[in-house]
Image (cartoon, rainbow, N blue to C red; front, side, top):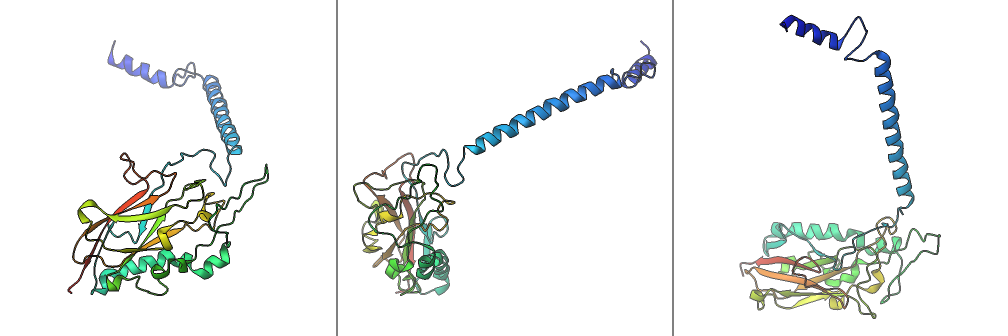
Length: 284
């Protein structure tokens, strides 16, 4: 076949003036195809919208329908420093001022006046359950007060430097939120226990816990979710290092102690515990 014949065939394929066909189809044929696909995709879009609508009807804005319940919640510290390291020089104000500012910022929502204004004075040592009544939703749910003054020496109220200027720093520990978790049974409140790693047993020294015994009072549980409990304040535990060895890096591990929460999971080394490095340098 000649080259010109092939060229004419391609031209006629795109547009044949005799049959008035474009790419092998007439205008009416193309119109029917367009209408078919238009109707098909409108149907698919309608099915998708209907499916999403039905699914949304089953969801509760205040409570997740499904959740992966964590067997053991994680812990976090404040200030956390870089890579969970808190290193500073006692005589150098600039080296620890960022830690003090971080604690001030973190604790500002816990100011007594703020808590008394927004939250409820709950009865301690028992779960504060606020269940729904059949189809009547008990929302928004109240939250218990956690006043900053509960942290005493680590509240920043009596000592605005949180002990950092004296080489007796405060570290605040919070328990990650888990909806519906009841961390403790038979009335035993969960608590925090901190200890040095094996190689640092003689270096950490004595520590003080605030609140006393390092407990998370049961009245702060269960947690019902961010939307259901908009004013929820996570309970905190502060630890104060009273006579730590200076000029020495110390590896500290804090664990949650509860009779229904395991804290020894080799597959997840962050479950129920947190580790950090602490070093206080001094010229003395």
